[in-house]
Length: 354
Image 1 (tube, rainbow, N blue to C red):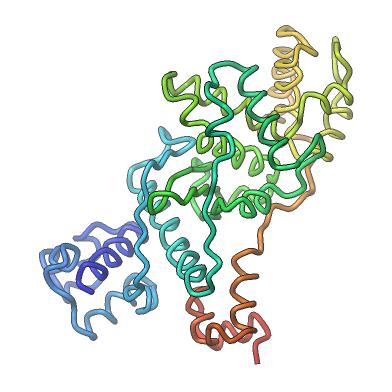
Image 2 (image 1 turned 180 degrees about the horizontal axis):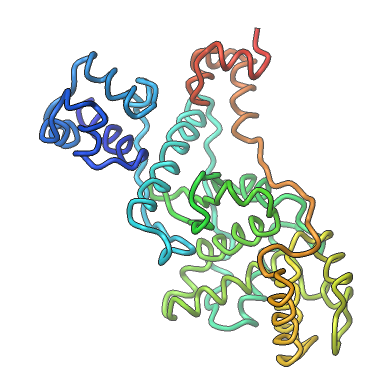
């Protein structure tokens, strides 16, 4: 109990971005920084009154501090780590752990836990070039039965393959991260603020998937090269070479914005990523590629492209497990509310529970 509380307490503090002194100040010095440090070390457990005060200061339910599920997160890699302050990284990691603690406990209660198996671990030995990144993407599409067709919902696909996907509310300098939890559970997190750019979310998720699945095949190359190869893998997953050549042909001197927009709408990949795929597949040359990106910059289209992808990236697996367990009376309404961080009345109103 003591060790579990100390870990939960530290996670709560980091989740809200407080230093020990900052939390003491938020508690109006009802307790000293030194006492909070002892809570965090597991030397002392606060009494009920102090625990209630801490919960209020951190805007968390008391149940948060009493959860028994332990989350050990390791091998954390941020896609844009150099732009994130240490404090912001800590908040993102704790948001990830907080959601996973509920998700994994729900799976444990309902018996829906499934192991992840990396289908590329034995079949793909090295990824050191574009061709090898492309082969890896084609192999994964084959093993997952995707064929050459567009992926309608990347989040749903990855969750079906037992990869936990987490939406994080963070600064826009954060795109995504990937990590391993409790030794063998792969996790990918992405920024909720990108919800108006679904194509960017899709690319980010598959970029992080490449890091997870191909780390063994890229272990001996520089980080910058890994990033390029993960970009190439993500592009190949979203838009296979055969499909790209069916749309554009084998060789082009220029491509219209309308063509790129149509591909974006169908495959959920940005127009800029389509052009990079076309260059990698030798459909267009370096000169045209540079001209295209110069034009995109001049038109202020690098961030907001003129044509949008209108697909939706969501997964309802967590809720599906939750409401099945509730319907079959595996869990109570109180427990269901606990799993979604709501009080009972709020939960009943939001989910039409009688």
